[in-house]
Amino acid sequence: MLEEEFRKESDGRTYLLLKKTKVTFEEEMIRKTEPTGVLSMVRPERDDIYKYEITGRKSLAVTFERVPMNAEQIEKVLCGILDIIEGGKEYLLSEDNYILLPEHIYLQLPEYKVTLCYYPEYGVPFSEQLGKLFEILLNRVDYREERAIAMVYALYMQLQEPDVTLERIRSKLKEQVQSLKPENPVREKERQREEPEFRYVKYDESTGRKSVAEEKRAKTERKASPGTSLWERLRKEVGAKIYGREEKGKPAYAGEAVSCVCDTPSEWGTTHTKVLSVKKESISPALRSAEREEKIFLTKFPFYVGSMPDYMDYVIDKDTVSRFHAKFMKQGEQVYLMDLNSTNGTRVNGRELNVRDRVLLAEGDRILFADAEYIFSEKERVEKG
Image 1: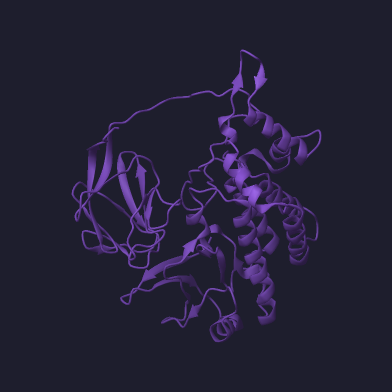
Image 2 (image 1 turned 30 degrees about the vertical axis):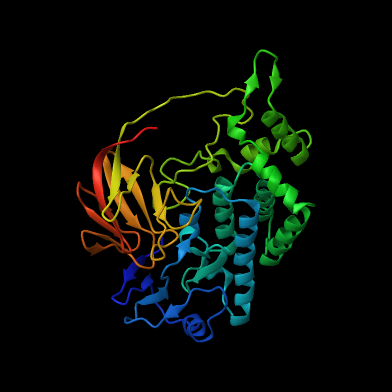
């Protein structure tokens, strides 16, 4: 387990600190040469830490906690990781010392440019790390995209082979990208927009016929593997725990439980849509703007606020607010706030939050997302209509 610490200093910069027990040549090498895609190392004040600047950086875990990954995003992330590790060989950097945990893989949006943290004392086998990363990616893939599923699945199975190497993985990824590349990218995007989500499959009991969505799904399965559906192969060969059925006490991302946007059905291939429960709430925690007539109802958790559309539950349209600025979490009836390594910070009653710190909110707390001020209310009546 990594012994890590996060520090936000008076100049507004944020740093990741990792424990140091010995002197390594890699530390000086990275500081002087700054290899492409490797997190910058700063000379520390103490001899027992490695110090990395992570100001404003967003991790893979944060970026895709709520939003599923499509094929293009997976391709960019995986190609970025493998290119960085391959390029690091020029500087004698070991592939086993890159931290491939989702919390330590940093993405520059919207290009999805990857930056990795190189920890000279890590020493976890590359193939082992990559295998665990693929398990997580399989749980984050957009199930409406057969290309995305096929790409990650093929690479995951490649890792199960003996004597796997970085070169083989790079070759397999290139092969998958080429083989799964759509002949008509414009039409492919249109198809994705038209494609119904698999979890909304319906069945007409009066005629005994499947819906269009179910027919498309069956076609996808036949194309993926004649005689055996891709979904069934994934369940048997990779393991059901990857698809939302996590091992007890072991969430997909270490550190906190994860909620997945793509709700996985209780049994793949079901032909009926079942409504388990419908819960309506008229009272909700909320934020009231201190500057204008604006109210944010926290109706689901985790609840993200920031300036990046499509990824946020609520968009604050201000240049000072980061794309991924902060998130609200709920435990029982208590609501907590966490800063997501925002550039200009998050403050509660004047206190600035450190990275990954979470603070319990109370009625009337004043919250600043950069310079956007809100007042927290534990119970507000949700306006309907």
